Structure formats: C-alpha cells, structure tokens
Length: 392
Ligand code: BGN
Image 1 (cartoon, rainbow, N blue to C red):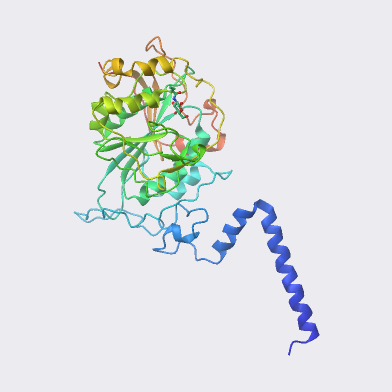
Image 2 (cartoon, rainbow, N blue to C red):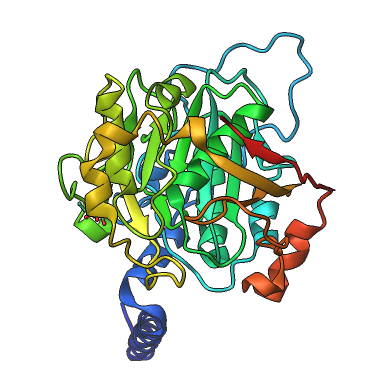
C-alpha cells in the first residue's frame, strides 16, 4: 500500500527530475540535449559497435568512436597481412559540428598514431591504398583545424596509408586554387609514390566514411552532395569541392589550369579537361558523398574572377599549353608539422613569377592564427627550401 507520505515523495521526485531535464534542454538547444541523453544510456566507445548504430541515425556517429581500440604501436611482424578490402572500422554517417574551443593540440592528442608531416598507416595491417590529401590554403586556420579534426579519424577508419599536405599561398595577391593544386601534386609526388590524390577544399567536412578516399578507374568527383546545395549536385558537370585523381589521370589532362586567379570557373575547367583527356567523371552515391561546409564570407583576396567565362570557353585550345607542364612556382618553406606537411609557396601573379619576401606560415600570428595554436605546429622540425621549381 502506498502511504500518503511516500506518494508525496514520488511527486517531489518526479517534479525534481522534470526540472533538471527542462534546465538541460533549454541550456544548449533541444537536439544536442537529446543526443546527450541517448549517450548517457549507452556505454561509450563500445568495441565493434558501428557509429551508425550509436545515434540511431539522428545525427550520425562520433568520428573517433571505435578508433581507440586499435593497437597504439605498429606490429613488428615481418609481413603484415593486407588490410581487408572493406575496412571493418567504417561506420557510415558521421556527426559533424563545430564546437568552439577546439585546439590543434586537442586534435593531436586525439590522433596519437599520426606522425610527423601528417602521415599515417594502419598499425595492424598493410594498407591497400596510398592517398595524399592536397588542401589549398590561405588565412583559413580556423577551418583547417576542424577539417583536420574530422579528416584524420575519417581516413584512419578507412585503413589508408595517407598524408595531408597544406599548400599555402604566400603573399596577398589574388588566390589561385587550381595552381596551388598543381604545386601540391608535384610536391607530394616528389615525396612518395602516392597512388591517389584528393584535391580538397579546406571548408568541406565529409559526413559519411563510406565515401572512401581512394581513386577510381576514372577521375572521381567526391563532393556530390553538399549541404549548401541542398545535398544535391548543383549542375551535371560540377567538379568542385573535393575530387580524386590518380597520378596517371592527372598527367593525362595536363593537371589543372594555372591562370584562374580569384573565385570561380577553375573547377569547371578541370571538369572539361577530364573529357579532353579522354576520361569521364565518376561519383559516389548522393547518400554517401555528403559534405558539410563551414560557413564563411567570401575571402579577402579571392574576388570573383570576371575573366572566367572567356577562359572557360577556350579550355579546348589552352589545356595542353597551360597546366602541369607550365606550372612555375617557388617553394618558400616545407614544414613537417605534427598533423600535416605545410608547403608555403610563391606562385607569383598574373604577370608571372617573381620573388616575394618569405611570409609567415599558417602557424604564425601574422597570418591571423590564434596564439593558442601556434605551439602545436611550430614545435616541429623545419626544413627550408629556396629553390625555384619550374616544370617546363
Ligand atoms: C559555378 C562556378 C564554379 C563554382 C560553382 C559552385 C563559374 C564559371 C561560370 C561559367 N563556375 O557557377 O566555379 O564552383 O558555381 O559554386 O563561375
């Protein structure tokens, strides 16, 4: 029998719980709190549990879930078995958010197996694929931090042998995304026999790890479904955001154009080059090739390029005389940082290549990087080069 006293106790307990729940829900938004409660009733990082299952498809899983169970050192076995064709670590949709207060030091701490220069290979099996990620960059340290936070575990889940290259345009002249990609291709291939190169915008975060960062038999456009385009392809020939080419694909289309200064058109030119090189574009499914873009205003130094329409109309005439074979640049510095290789490069101006005074790298305050991030990168050993790289 429930006495009057115990009845009141239950009513008070019930009201108390309700009060706590309401306070939590109103603090940081409803959705985050719901996820929080789901997590309370779940064991963290349960081995073998795929991330997709963990959040019942509400927002996707934690990209770091299930990586903590990997060995913390490489196997000493003389011959490791090849990794399976499909990685058992793949979990599907990934929850992507941009919390304030994330530091590069935290990204380092969460990726203990990533070594100097942002390199990784699986500790317990021989990777089947070697992928270089090429990221053109200037004044986007904030975006880079989030991209590294998501990309490192994303690639580890895919059991790849990988390296991340940031190609940093020195000086303040108009940004040239495609030329920086040419630099990235040559400088990455100089270091390692990569079998696939992912040309990656700094502000795009992949949202599903089934979007594997390996090359197809033809050039692949990976960013088929971006949130800013309503998770649809904006137009059939779109080749922007993230694309993947093997060294052979790249050379067959004479790399990318060098003369698109400012925003727009260069990705369309690259798309045209794919077919001029006798190839076609492949894509993952809309379900898998999903990306979240980190919101930002149009950059200073990356104004819309008014010449892009005229240039695009002439790609058929220009692609053989402008590309990888004519990419002129000068590497100012090459830094092997804990989470990436940072290549700072003078790519000149529309008038050609001429010497610029060396500018600080993305680690330095002058480039707008918050002070708390400088030590993580700058502690690494540096190698300076000052030789012009010309590919005539
Ligand atoms: C297109 C741009 C692309 C850009 C996409 C998505 C041009 C050339 C015009 C013929 N192309 O319009 O560079 O990636 O939008 O924003 O501007």
